[in-house]
Length: 366
Image (cartoon, one colour):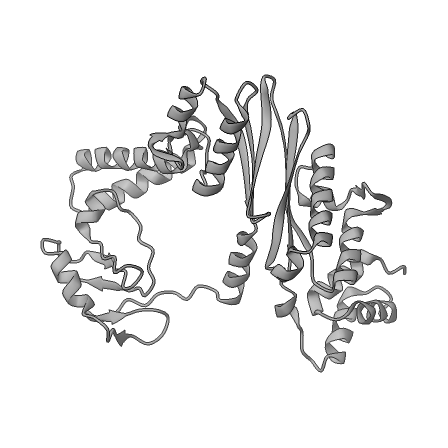
């Protein structure tokens, strides 16, 4: 059986063995992947080396047609930032973005099967395997997508920090270059989920309403009042999640929609946003899976996946009592200790604060 570059790449990802070792193991196993994996593990003394082969870094490359009719984003991941900053790696990523734009790739899986534009005798997957052999790091085409402008629109782009974040936006053709760049920059910074409230899927709306009602009912509100509170929270969700309702990053006094209206009434159709940080977050979550939180048994205890300990640097119980003077019994409270000493309770919840990010965290019960 012929040993292909894709087979070598797959075996390297599974075992972390060198390219020549993988070729030898596949040849000895007659192309049987499972037997080749066992052979590599035996030769390494029974140790698999997947950990250091994780492609947790990389960059995003963007390509836009000269006439603005189409564009594409690709996220090409590698193991270290050192490789991601090399000219060779960046040129390869840019070439893939250009090809994705020209051919209109729907996703990374479709792109991997395409012949490489610069070398049609090999597929994109084989070209990546060749880069792995040359560079010596695992390389993964994590994501790819293309965006085609509708009639009367054009595609613009923004690349942040040399490829850490890439954005494509479809916007009215008459919009000025500054407006296109400002909208794309805002998408990079604010991470909207939707263009406007009209395109938010109904299941998402229903979920937000359900969460709002549950929070209101936990505060003892009657059903009619709970429904109104849920509607208010839904409106707040739209402001946070929808592009045209978000405060414009360059002038928070006006929304993105107001900014567009003031610049000739341009409209945004679709947008795409990729961030190379996604690979790092995913790698961390795989190395450190979430541990179910254990509710502390008494005030002042901190739950962090370890046996409960009393916080020694301040009095969280006292802070809870001061901040929750009129709280109802049985209400669970999340408290931040550190990160600016932010402590929020029921009063903040009533003002619209639904979630709190914590540094040292725990749940206390009054």
